Length: 389
Image 1 (cartoon, helix red, strand yellow):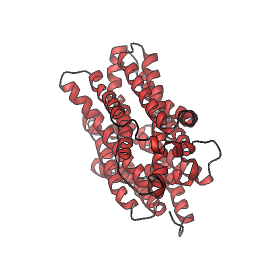
Image 2 (cartoon, helix red, strand yellow):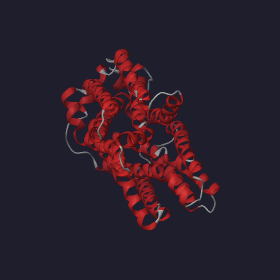
Image 3 (tube, one colour):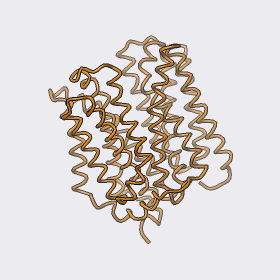
Image 4 (cartoon, rainbow, N blue to C red):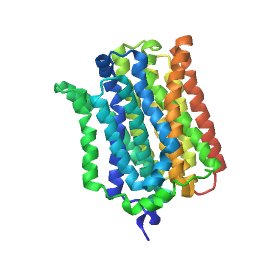
């Protein structure tokens, strides 16, 4: 019997290469935040056109959610992973050499589509290999992604400090993808056939769509907080702009810490009740952050929000993939539509509300989204009470 049917959790070469590929994609994606200001200066862009570089990556994720399963079924899981890694490298190269915003924005669509499809293939292989233990692999992959994402601005800053350009910094993920391919291009092959079968068409169960919406609410809340925290702290809590920008790290660090803690908790407790508890913690923390009377109270709430919110996505994702049974690949693909539309729509909607009513009022959108996610997770935990995970 092959290892992916034994459902043992083994951090072997295949597992680590999967983690590193996801991490390098997150490094590339997170590098866009410090890169876009340089593009704006070089190409003489306004803020609206500049923001399209972020939207493009989200649109690429939506495209992957719609058509990624077709690509993987045609190529096979292993070949699709490496082909999409090559496509992601192509997107970075276009970004490096392009002299017009049409191509730099287009590179984001290509990069988002290839990166998300690559992730679908890796998650499908994890699901086939680890079965009920998939939550460990998915959470660890998210921890790796968070670490690489956190490192992106630090890496970019270090290259700039060394009198190198942002283009030199983006050579790092290119070289990493090439090194992984040279070292481990066959690691996914033994599991490719079984994982590819999970991308066949068909209907996904109601329970899957339940978590699809949970993840939509959670990702929309998470990215809205990331996008608007510095503005909120400056305008509503009267922090100096530089301090407000630095305070974003509170949320990112506690997100990372929460995922490390959640990994241990997921080995001990049922995922349903655990998800209900962390969603409550996230909502309480957010209300303290939003309505706190002093900056210190608000920053404490921001940290609690990160701790709670950190595990909603990876654990809900695990539940969603598990509910799909033999359609894990298709489930992973459709989830890209959830995350892509959440990232694309909600921060922009908050900006529009903020222009009309102010940033303090626009935060009611996040409170509503987090409340809906919590209600769905509490309902799920109650319905699943007494049943095995």
